[in-house]
Length: 289
Image (cartoon, rainbow, N blue to C red; front, side, top):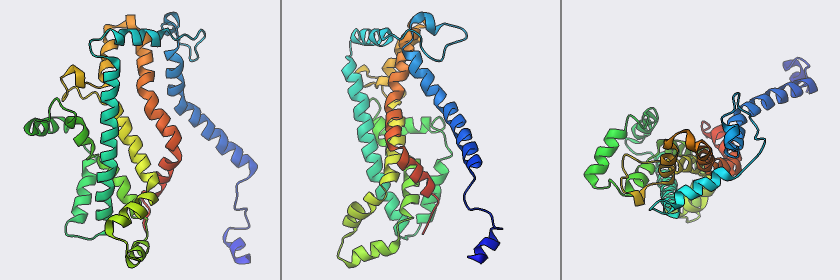
């Protein structure tokens, strides 16, 4: 014990109350700063027209109203494609794309992480390299591939590329690296098959990772307009349909505020419920056995 005290110079291991208060204050300031866009958008969606055009703008609404949402649903009800059809397209693409990504990425990450085969290192480095490319860079090659496969103007043009989200494969692989090999070897000795090890041991242990990947995938697919691939009005997604509503101009500024809140609410709610898993994934993404 005396050696430990000498190493730390006799100082306390924990911070003082003043230090804790200072850190708490700094974190509160940063928290309010990052929460400001969300708070402003929520209040903006419930503002009447006279408050929307105030300068300087008010952060909090004074006379809240639901007229913006009522106008939004009235406009959508007059479309020859029903509002429920747009919602179905978005939900279908989001659910299928997310589930497919988690299954394919987790299986691929498990193989690359726990099995050594020729080219596994090169393959993983290739996945890391793809993280540097923006979607705008790969837009033309993606369209050419979809056109050659005959998937343009189909759900497959959105769903299949979502299966290959590189950030999902990367996070899952890094998280699987933290699972001890001895645990999997013990399961093999007990008679477990490879698929059983993956389903009943690996997947439950990497739950924070695939929940994080699910959030990223839902955010990308829920906001996907896919205007480059989908031309049929009956196959278009909800964000594309809503974006066309607000192109009229200032006359639909209130409806535009409601559209912004409607589009962002699903990813935000998902992140709120799974934020602890996201933090755990980010903390463990660089840790190995």
